[in-house]
Image (cartoon, rainbow, N blue to C red):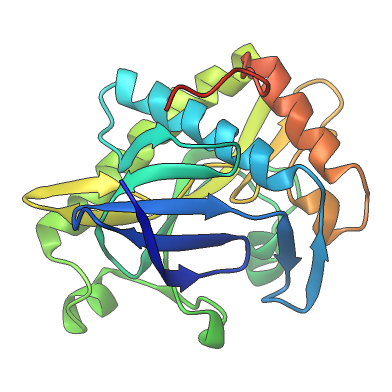
Length: 242
């Protein structure tokens, strides 16, 4: 499979076409940003850690029956994925109140949410990813009612699976976002699952082990990501079979 022209470049990933119409190459860069690109930096090894971490999580979800776009690791920073028709909606589950939820609703930071909350956001950086609901999705044709229901069911299933996985590693899955896309007649989990797109706290100390370390200037961002990987048994140095 040959790498072609760049299809998309985001804050921390680039996506490239290939000579196979149904496949893309997803490259994880060392870039990191926060607050809609207002805070930007480059962190050595971050792309590699996130690429391998994402491969581990996607593979684990596949084993648990969640269909994803992930195919294989290609290099330290690149993965082969299926070419999805992405739905421009982010699905967010929150198990603990923190971040924007507290700012919007004035609730206590660190409050356990029983049951977890679910929210939709429009994926649009220029509009700062505004919160939307199922009526917006239907009115603007972003997804069908069946797709909306499938996204909700799959997102809660991922929450169930990964909450236990992280708990076994002494961590709390605080919240996360997922994106989905169409592939033939399937709706697959796309994009990524890394500490860039979720919040993870140490179970005992509630130390932040995610991108909040960058947002809040706590330092040790990549080291925290590596710690999460280590606790889950992700081998960041394993040879890649190509």
